[in-house]
Image (tube, rainbow, N blue to C red; front, side, top):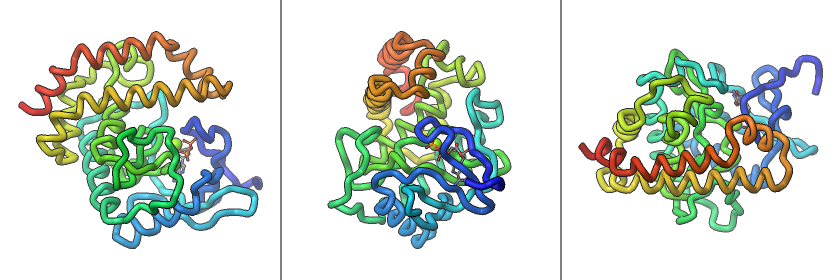
Length: 266
Ligand SMILES: Nc1ncnc2c1ncn2[C@@H]1O[C@H](COP(=O)(O)OP(=O)(O)O)[C@@H](O)[C@H]1O
Ligand SMILES: [Mg+2]
């Protein structure tokens, strides 16, 4: 790294290791970076321009991608990132990603990360980690998705569920209060996300259950990081209320399952 490099903050997996150098971002390359770069280039060839363009892998295990200009909401998430317009723009951008992604064949021999992958698998590459820190905004609207490190094949509905967790958010009010503005109406916002994505009736009927499944997968992911002694995850878990918070979030999802489904299908 040189004096012109600017450290970029936002994520947890590569905290302190992501830098901007002019028009490029340099960050640790994931184990399947070569396959992922090929996928991102295929998205670009098919006209999807809302993701960083991979430039090269370095000899020391890092990757370079284009820097996407705009604003990224970092926790605690500001009001501008949680407006109705922002939520709608995230839903339509995810739909646009999926429409292109569905046309790109997933390499059957590639090893995709299992961390946040759909346990039921699928044929389309899902992003899996569409949290606010991984969306670049311009003029109050989602303009690009970044950080495809945890992308893996799955059902499109899985990606919608993961996205809902962060953007509705699908958290009990006390848990939501740690990072999100207060007063967000979860059933109404879930409906807005589903409408802006253009979710089918069949998927709407399943979404609440898939969000519960996605929450279990996220909890297991955090548990593995914590068991490995990852200091960033240990600190975040402690500051945000420990495993009790996860228990509370999961209970709340089950208790409100019917309310969410009714809001989605009404
Ligand atoms: N290509 C990019 N364009 C614009 N900003 C980026 C880009 N890549 C990373 N960033 C910024 O750096 C932060 C951390 O990068 P990210 O790759 O998401 O790290 P992590 O893997 O730790 O989540 C992001 O939240 C975002 O603010
Ligand atoms: Mg990130």
